[in-house]
Image (cartoon, rainbow, N blue to C red):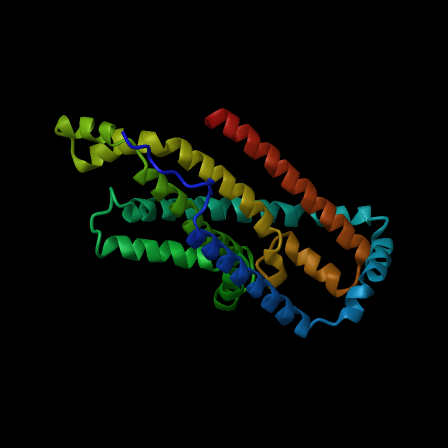
Length: 269
């Protein structure tokens, strides 16, 4: 019997793989250098070096917060919670049918309906809620309605994407079992698909509401209502003690939403 010939030493990667890896790293470093040069082109480093002094000065002006201003923040905080909650609810209602139309195993048409649904998801996710609010304020005027619709339009893509991926990953054996009973298409969705994706649906909805609490706090900067409107007014008048109090109020609201989200996840999932 002839003995098999082995290389004199073992190598994890071949020469071609090593060259490819080095080439990718070279492209990555080149891109980083190019981005750094582009950033430095319009950067005034005098202001950057003076930033610690300015930060210390503004922080000194913020302290102590103007606690008496809190009486004017309760209503904007309530508006912010309403924007996030109603926007999330509206976005979820619109995202559910889009998700079923986008999933490859539930869409009625792979060549027409599914691409349209995927385009809606991509369009929603590609535009930030602040930009949606800026456009809607120009169309609908300033107020809570623009903020609610902006949050809803942003939420469609997020919720629908996670849901349609969950729909495509369901156990097909349960679908086949329900089909074998002679159930209709709607009954198959009701008894085989929906129970499997319900934990994902609940978790995604709660997570999106938690995100929308944060996003709705800044919509007032473009006139969409909420506490961001008070923040914009305080920044415009350089009322730094009021800005500090608004920051604390926003932080407290976000912590509260985190607590609510955690409790809801433990209760429903």
